[in-house]
Length: 134
Image (cartoon, rainbow, N blue to C red; front, side, top):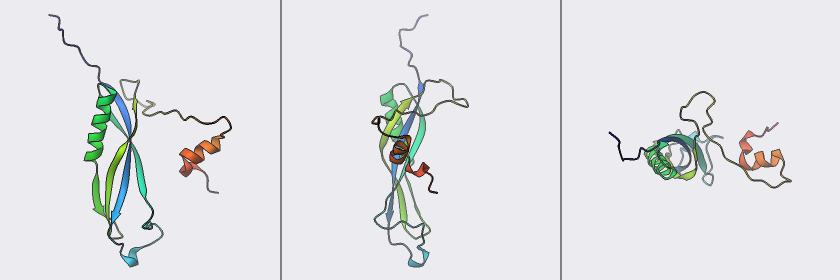
């Protein structure tokens, strides 16, 4: 018996998420050290997750739902309430492989640059934490 219903192709997608660490309260004075951020500093986390979806639109919806569920808060060692809050989805990427195996590319993006930009210019702009500080 033939079915007229169209089967939907489920694919793997990655989604790059941005979270912000929001600190509230005053740090305990004798607990402050070089690792405690000054009140005017901000901390963000970039996270890449896997989702299964039929369309890119659905992948964004699922990723946003998962990101919101992963928001959490806790008291840090400085006595401040820290809340990790979802900001937005930065990018999504459809994986070409149906199975996840060693070596499967899970994320990719193209970086457009001016011809006179050096490799170090690109690294400084997009990945400054990767530069040698020697």
